[in-house]
Image (cartoon, rainbow, N blue to C red; front, side, top):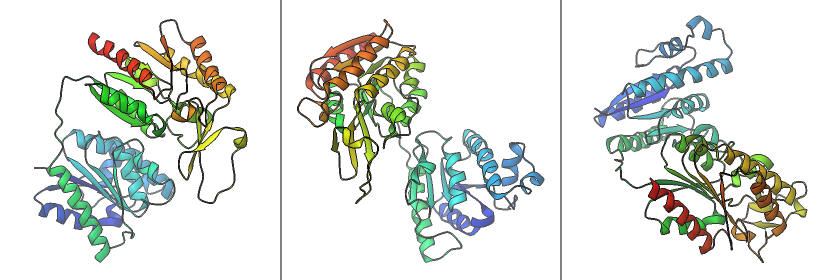
Length: 404
């Protein structure tokens, strides 16, 4: 029978967890209660007790009870990661739901991040709101978040409704899991942003193989690298290096360090197009007037009401070219670089706001001078979003597909 794991601290959320357990069992499903308590370590309702979780990690009750709260949470967080992974590997559950406040949600999130893509994972918490809170709970994983509106301190008409909705959603995913259909098609991973959407659309529509796109926004790149490490893709069409720029120079889309490395380590073919490598972006709150240093010196264009794209300086582009070359040189598989001569994003083409041939040339020259001789470099007339660039990339990928 299908089983849903309920993960939380039973010393503070027992009433809510038992209500969820009752709802799940009414659906004809089983439950598996994982207790993350850090003070009362044993509970008669727990299927995996806090004491068991800690002892499996070599932490004993007398040790945890002497710790400060922050240290307790940190210790339980690490211990739960391994315990939840093992429980899943042993087939103890097919979906996992956390009902909690800040402490519970954070510990459960770290455990859920160790579980595979596709397994239903959900966190309901009053902390699923506010500035920059989503990252700590989701990271680069497929975790579903629901803002509970109210805090969980006993059951009431609102908290009952929130828990009920979460249980129904989780039950639906567990009862009706997605069934993947394996095909013989080559799987191609590709990065993109709004400023290279026309390129991405051209690739997707121009190929019969499966192309999966990732938004290079600081999280998308991490997801991309993680899926490459998991062996999901046969070919990497890395057509947006904006996150490399953010890693080195800062910007709104920071958060994906080490881009280009997973595909190189995996040895799969890499087709690299430096989409948006010239864009340094900033996020401005409504009404904000403060601007970063040297902002007025940069060519810039607002992508929307909050995000402003600015052009990297030639000296920055030279540095980026050298860094991209260094990462590509470490690749164990074949690498081809495609360099369009009229801009690496839509606003970078001739006559547009971010057009700066000197900066683009600085990147291209540094890249070509630092690349190993085994890396192919193809130069093409036009912008990255033009048909000539799209067609050339399709031809190169098709050659690798035919060799497979």
